Length: 88
Image (cartoon, rainbow, N blue to C red; front, side, top):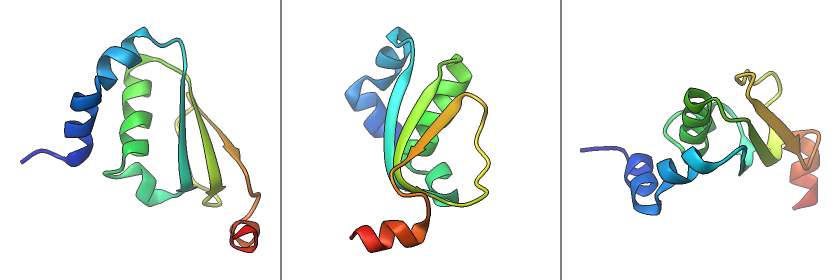
């Protein structure tokens, strides 16, 4: 049994799209440690890193102190979790 992210990536032709891209844009509601393990965002971070492609993630909020690889840039729509909760 494979992971759901791998299946979806295959169904949508993600590898071919990544191969043709100069850079990649993605998003996540809240970027945190869980985003990196088993979620589509984590898969995207790994694959873009392996392919040497820059990745820009637009997120609602980002876990303070979250370590990301150097090819990943993040734009957070709320500076803190408190701001993200207040915006709801």
